[in-house]
Length: 157
Ligand code: HEC
Image (tube, rainbow, N blue to C red; front, side, top):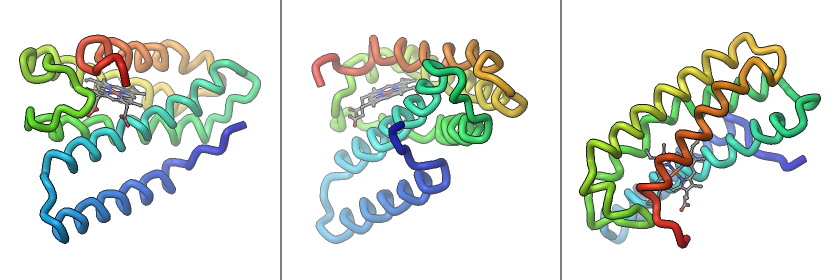
């Protein structure tokens, strides 16, 4: 099974990355635009990793590990608010679509919904003894990633 960093190691990895980004910015005063894109993409990538760990358990229910699942769900819930402030500057398009800036209400609805469903998944994970206990909430989170990407993430990347 693929080894994905646990919540703690992901978190420290993330702060090292952030630190490096900050230092790099100070050293060469590069455009803030690029650090915004990097910060939000780093978040999204780590969400993808967490979803992968939980998704593997969904595919093979007998591999359900409550502690690991809880850790990944907690990570998603804790990080769920972090990318959105990095979408303020339209210069920093990255692989976002125009709609992020033309439909700001729609985008913040999706971002808020994501924070809601990850909090629900985290709550469901607390006392889960099998994948069945978390499946509905996990499905909602997957749906939230998908819905937002449909309108707000460029297709061909
Ligand atoms: C509110 C909208 C929204 C939600 C919710 C959302 N994403 Fe994204 N995601 C985006 C946008 C916009 C981009 C493009 C960002 C960019 O390129 O700067 C993106 C990019 C990504 C990327 C590519 C990162 C890269 O390195 O280019 C991955 C992977 C990803 N999302 C995974 C996820 C997963 C997994 C979830 C759910 C757990 C999720 N996203 C939820 C909007 C969202």
